[in-house]
Image (cartoon, rainbow, N blue to C red; front, side, top):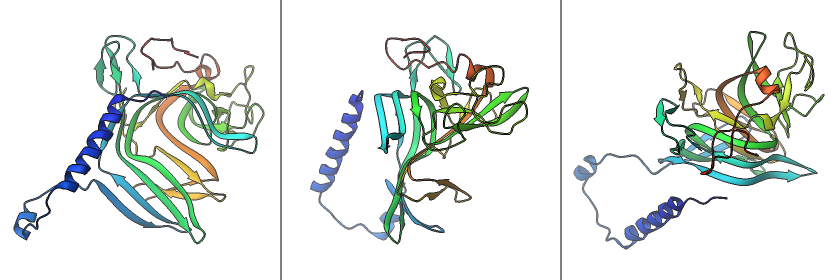
Length: 298
């Protein structure tokens, strides 16, 4: 993993700040003085009641802009399988050419295009037996995620265009396999759409499905109504659940995302991908290394 130097600097400054506060003299202030103070808490804690679980969400009042590469990730490795497995995972990327526009900002070749995350949170789910799961996410997030993914548990909120119609994407167990959100290896059109074969078909004129390795880079975010610009999403999270599933509430409390055991990754995107591109050359990878290794990379 590439460890960012400013990450260590931030940690050092944080610890130094804590130390200086600890050494400061404490003195009471008046109610009038308190009335003149405005600000936002560094941490907000919410207790949320659910149908089968009670939740505690701890949100930090900070914003993060980052670009990071990870050589290999495997989580939920159990019973001869892995909930999520990927190599060369990256958040954010590097502009490949002068004048590259991303989310309404123009970059020059070599500029960092950061993954933006606001108000990170950790949330615990508890039931009568104790801790049922926890998740990590952001109140607002957008930016590129690149990887070579071979096993995925969760949801990829992508649209696929086929024969002039736009459909939701569906994860599959593999060629000829059933639709699934657990340890999927392929992605394609949802079953029973017009003009497609049932299930995951990767060959011929009826191909409606492709390996996840075809999704070399995805753009996290929601539809802003402005072409080429993604709005921030509050749905990007990684959950870790015990045997039974957990219904994680959306941050606005209006609905929930029901997930099964193990690891679950929710990746909201505002992307619509042509089926022929998905099953053919796939999505190019954004530049994620200082030395540009091409659009396929690995």
